[in-house]
Structure formats: structure tokens, C-alpha cells
View 1: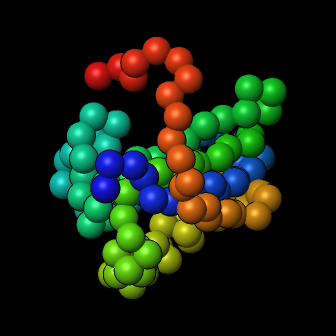
View 2 (view 1 turned 180 degrees about the vertical axis):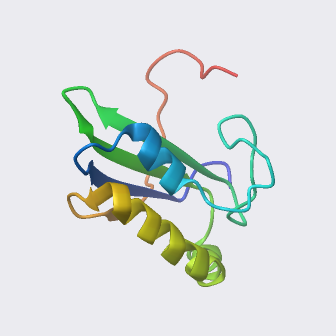
View 3 (view 1 turned 90 degrees about the vertical axis):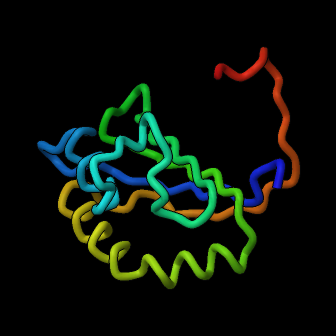
Length: 121
């Protein structure tokens, strides 16, 4: 697959007195064996998945996570089943620091366009 197949958009709202750092620590999957997902692939999902977490520039309590997924529907289904117990734990940890904001959404990628300069390496 030369282009991502799906995009997931998740929205969260930090609870009072919680920070993005609190969210990120709750969001990180357990069992990364010392790897830093900001610098290297951690193989949590079977295929390539890049996640971008972003904070609203006008509201530091408003967070979105955008997952860019290079996998088929069948591969995603397998990952969902395999990671279900861990995802339940992650969800509980996240709910301690953030409420679910707007509806989470899952999209099929139709095309990919580069409208600026080359991507940095």
C-alpha cells in the first residue's frame, strides 16, 4: 500500500487540572519495551499507523488525535480483536484525565495530496 487506507479522528476534552502531558501518558500503549513512539516504530499495531496528537491553539484543553492507517479492513479488525484488552485499559486511563469530546470518526482515504514542499525526512 503506497497510500494510507483510513484516517481515524478522535476528540478529547481535558478534565480540570489535567495537562496534555497527563493525557499523553494515559494515551501511550503499555508494553513499549523502552521504545519512544515519537522516534521509532513500536509495533503496537500490526501495520503502519501514524498518530498525530494536537492541541487546539485557542483552547489547551481541546485535543484531537488523528490516526493515519496503512491497513486493510481485515487487518484493522484483527488488530481491534488482538488489542481489545489493552485498549480497554488505555480507555480507562484516558477517562481519568479527559472526557470524550465530539463524536469519534473513521474515514476511508480517497486520495493523498502534497500541496507544499517535500515532506521532511
